Length: 181
Image 1 (tube, rainbow, N blue to C red):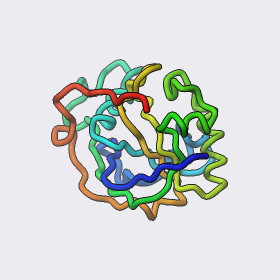
Image 2 (image 1 turned 45 degrees about the vertical axis):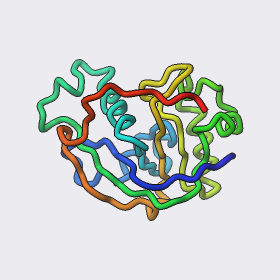
Image 3 (image 1 turned 45 degrees about the horizontal axis):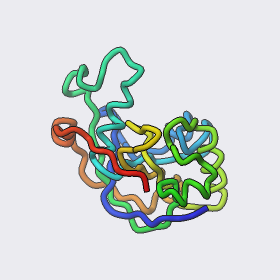
Image 4 (image 1 turned 30 degrees about the horizontal axis):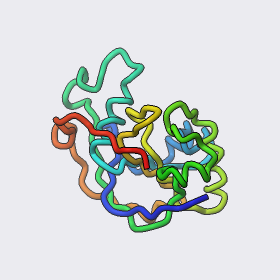
């Protein structure tokens, strides 16, 4: 596994009713891209507000309503966090993706199962987590930005900052995609 260093401001899209948006208990129980159900906790963060907005929209893709159809007080908050500089497994760069035996089109068309296997090995090796291309708005040739999956064993790297209601964080401009690296 290759590594990249990540640090600084990151963002967590969260339901406005959540008491603790940094609690990884729900993710441990239900699973996600980087953890199987019933395994370990992962805190899923967005590297930019553009990625956070893409994920907020994605959360409602299979629903009858969009995020904009919700009442204003029901739209997602944004928990701002700071992440201390640390090495994370690289699922961002072309070199890192190849080392993980993922296709060049990752994350487009890649199911959660291979990601969960990669993350289980990384977790067993006591890694801090995974820096990955965001699957929100991803196509086979582009992705909107990065996400950071912080393992529960590395939560000491994360410190809570402001929590913003939807109307204070959601961008008005259209998202732009980052080129493949």
